[in-house]
Amino acid sequence: MWSSEELAERWSLGSEELVLLPGKPDTGKLGFAVQLAFYKQYARFPEDESDLAPAVIAHLADQIGVSALLLNGYEWAGRTGRRHRQLILDFLAVVPFEGVAESTFRAWLAEEALPSEPNSTALEDQIGAWFACSRVTRPGSYRLDRLVAAARLAHDERTFRTVAAHLDAETRCRLGEEALQSDTSRIGLQP
Image 1 (cartoon, rainbow, N blue to C red):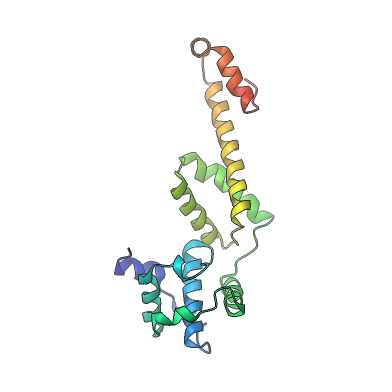
Image 2 (tube, rainbow, N blue to C red; image 1 turned 180 degrees about the vertical axis):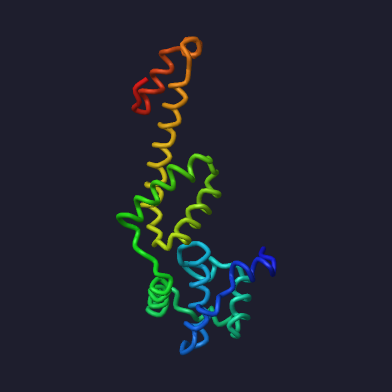
């Protein structure tokens, strides 16, 4: 559910984006506008119309002056959809997720995102926002899941080491040195 204020704030196209639409058929205008707005919001492209709320489609259709029903004929996976996605990436100056971009993402995960211990939904929103703001192509789900899992493990290991280093001898004794050592060795740490 989107309020009219949220639609205007988060799903409207700016004048610099609207100039990309002339010359396209109405179906293409709406498909392009939807893909552009969705990418700006989530740093990924929709797979099809079902990824979007009907209110978002209606808002964009109203903004560009076409019928929302035209989206039914848009070729999401076809040549037109692929060409539009490339135009959008070029327009937004999105860079590939490699080298510096990947290192920067890993550092951001370790230093900013994971220390706040967000739940999965909040972390997904933060990750989407990072890719959108950084103008970096979002990697596929499998690769991204592996990067996040590795970063979580590294974060948990650092946290465990920090906590273990701050325990005094009496606390270690109460917890049981063996249990502490087995937990440490279980995740590959030295007590």
